[in-house]
Length: 268
Image 1 (cartoon, rainbow, N blue to C red):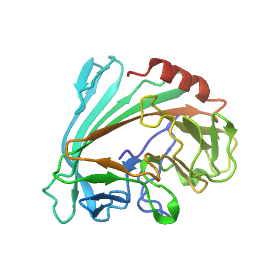
Image 2: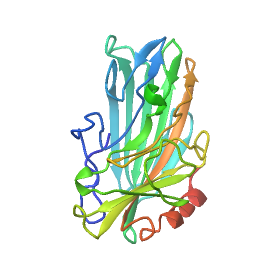
Image 3: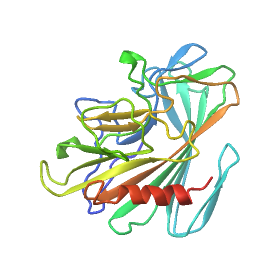
Image 4: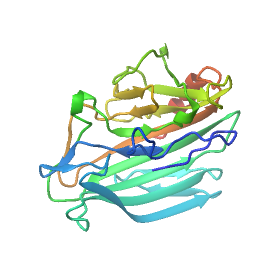
C-alpha cells in the first residue's frame, strides 16, 4: 500500500492505521471475504492471509516497457516515475504456498497545472491448484473490497463529487466512472485539495457501480463488490485506475476534463 500520499503543495492526503479503522492503509487494494478451496482469504484486515513481496524495481527519467503476467506490454515516457512490484498472497497457515500472484505497476506523472496523475495497473493470477473466489464484504451486504483510499480525516469535512454533481450522504453504490473526495487544507478551512479515482475503460463491468463513499473518510472503487468472481487455477484479472490529485474541489480541479483526457489517451 502507499502512505503517505502528499498533495500538490505538500499537504498530507492519506492516513494510516486510523483509530476508527485500523485496517485502512493509505492507498490499498484488498478483499475481506475471499476464499481459496473454501478457506477464508482475508487480506483486508489481514485475518488468515497476507501478502509477501517477491521483487520490486523502480525507475525515474528513462523510457521503460514492462510486460505484465497477462501478456500486456506497458510503455512509459521519460518523465514518469515507475514502481513495479510482484508479491503473492498466502494463507497464514501456509505462508510458503502462494495462492495469488499480484503484479503491480504504479506510474507517477509530473505535476501539471495544479494536478498530478498516478496510474495503478493491478494484475492478480491464481497460481495455486484450487479455486479462488474474490468478493467484497458480505457483512451487511456492503461489498467492501477492491481499490480504496483512506483520506486524512484530520482535515474534515469531506465533499464527495461524481459526474452527476455533489453527493449527499453515504453510498455503497453509485453510477459514475469517477468519484472525487475534496477536503480542507486546514481542518474546516476554506482552501481545499482532493483526489479522484478514475476507472479505466477496460476494467471489467466498466463503469462499475461498486463505490464505497463514507463521510468519516473513505473512498473506494469496489470490484467485484457484492458479486463473487471465481478464478480457476491459471486464471487472472486486471484492474486499472488513475488517482488524480488536485488543488481545490472537483470543479476547481477540473476533474471531469481530466477524466475525459484519461479515457481518450488510456492504453488499451
